Length: 325
Image (cartoon, rainbow, N blue to C red; front, side, top):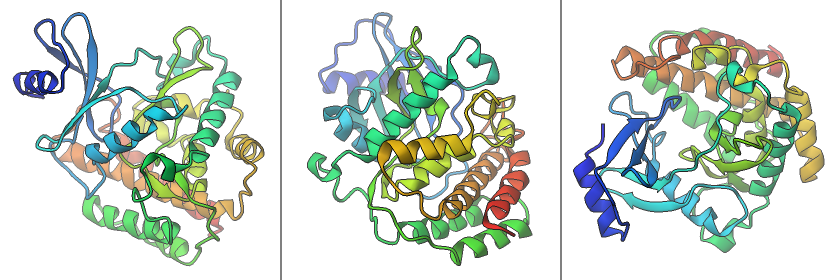
């Protein structure tokens, strides 16, 4: 939970008038940082802080998340308004955006998914077109050697969170180590781009109000974002959500359409896209294993926490499949 007295003091220190007693409610659906809606009865904020157990190095950096969201305030990328960042927490506070979240299959009732598909592509293309140096983000990441470093990083994450032996994951890691594609020109990379990390207009879901969950953002190869978006359509992701996920619905145009529509809209060559898909499946498998590790450590009780580990073998197998076992 969060210290509401401390939060009230922080808000006051940053010039935010708090009208009444603060109340905090955890926002469900998060599998990484803890997220709370805090209200004083007339206004509301979102507070993000790292989990209490199962920390993986750099995977829960809320201060890094705040930096990128704050920088994007001056762009046309839809993000929540920033309020404050507290290094001693650590925690961050942004304005509450009352958007619609498409997390489960049930959330898709009455939604035009073709329109949402087009909006996902539009925002991702716009994000990758942001001249990041103009917004003080030149040092936000190290684009050179990005793909190879990602492979090494997620292998280290696996070694940190693994709860079992999985020889196929070792094979996937080896294949990725030997399969570094020629890099695309660097851009801002969201790092976890998927439909349930967006807040959509409740009356017009084809319009995005805010893109959220930026803690894995950096500067790097934009095709990693495209591949990540595609892999969330794999049926194994249902285990992470704990029920049929919105992103795995057969109503979506499909991963090939996602990738090709991005290529057309952005003018980018997808290059050796299978390598990017292999990395994305590897990364998602490690994330799912991390959720399992936190659950086994007693730090997760939401739907999907108990079943997330079941997704890992299928994701690894798909990664090997796209790379051609």
